[in-house]
Length: 271
Image (cartoon, rainbow, N blue to C red):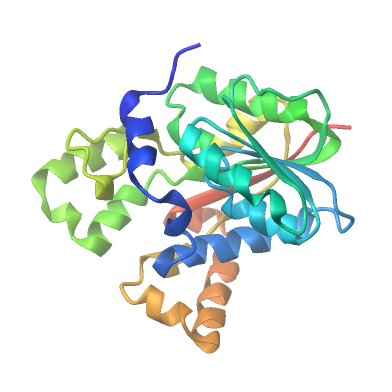
């Protein structure tokens, strides 16, 4: 099994991925992800597998709800940080592992988060392996939540932050839109790293091909994710609720799913 491209590991070794969604505009992704999870996770604390869980941002929150969480991540530094969360109200454990060959038993978890691996598995065969491994690890009837980056994310991000006015970035965007294959020859962290960007229809088809039952595909941020003053809006309770409501209003509208930077596929393992 091929190792991830070195630039992907380099990217996550050099940035603070955990801080990205707990500070500034990234908070919208975190808040909306928690909303979606909250609709489906069992009320009784259960066992959750967090694949690609990085430094444990989601795991720490899930543990605070009483769930037992096991984090699997490719980056040793992430696993080291996540392992220190064992003192949370729930139990958090972590180990290094690959989403395509999970180091866990069959049907060992009530729910699985696949947040991150689908971003960087650029070949369909590898993504299907990750889907099938997540389905293997969850109990029959349990949920698998998978996050993907929208096919149109670099186009909108480039407009919002000015990158699109650089001819090199425009070439990157053209390939993203044409193939979904994102490549960044500059290694600039602001232009992300080697990745696959999903069309919403492709995400649904992948899940179904892997044998999952798709409950819904959710657009996470909506148009609000591209607001230049998003961080300031999220700072006040009134502004935060307006932003969240704007995302909820269009989260299931098929014609607007690609407007969100991130998508979440809510799926179930067939009983």
